[in-house]
Every structure is written in structure tokens, then in C-alpha cells.
Image 1 (cartoon, helix red, strand yellow):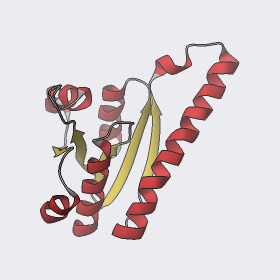
Image 2: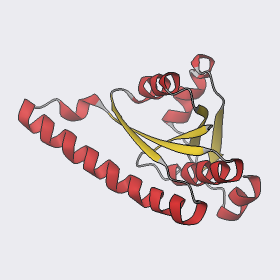
Image 3: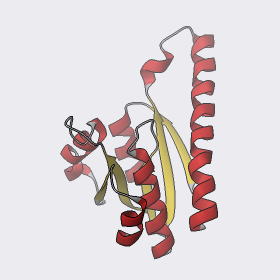
Image 4: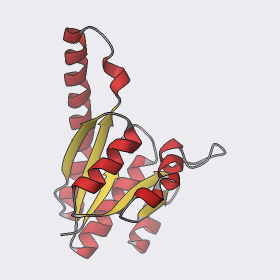
Length: 151
């Protein structure tokens, strides 16, 4: 089964990327993998404190994921999987794509405004020649109705 990989972060545009991935998966018989990457600089503390912070970060990610997962299950009948990795975001995304042969498309949300599409979109489009799959970039301001129409 082809899976859509979408990155879970705190950005506003993440919402449209999640919606797009779930709707495309539902319409094409695919699946959704939600990837969240915990940057290593969050744990540069004493070992005990670092471990507690790591667990708290995982718990926050799981709670955030569950909001999207419930919507995907209830509205799109898609049961997404969550993958949490630690490291630098772009290398971890590239590594996960290489490790999971079922991933067929990377879905990213583009930021709104003058600052451009966002650092993740910018970095991954520069690294796109290293990807064995296409990238779909979903505009952050795209309406739900328009998302439904294009999926």
C-alpha cells in the first residue's frame, strides 16, 4: 500500500498538509504516516533532565498526533501511523523515506506570507534530488473545500 508521509510540527500549515494526505489516502486506497522529529538540542542537559524532557516531548507529540488521527479515522476512515525520530529534521525525513519503501509521496504544507514557504519546504526542495519520491506542497491558505476538490 502506498503511504503519504506528512510531517507533524507546530506550524499552522501542518494542518492543510495533514488534511491533504488523509483525503488523498482515502481517495486512493493508501495510508498515512505522520512523522515528528525531536531536535537533539532539546536534550543538551544533564542526563536525567534530558531523559525527562525527551519523554515530555514524546507525550506532547502523541497528544498532538491523536487530534489529527481522530479526525482521519472519523472523517476519512484512515488509521495513520505515528513515527517519532530524534535528530535534525531534514536528514531524519530523508532517512525515513529511504527506510520505508511503502512511502510514495512526501506531503508538506507551505507557509503563508512574505517570508516564503517555510524552512522545511525550502530545505527539502533543495534536497529533492536526494529523494526517491515526489513532494507535494500544499498551500497553507487553501480552503477545506478546495482541498476536497483537488484530492
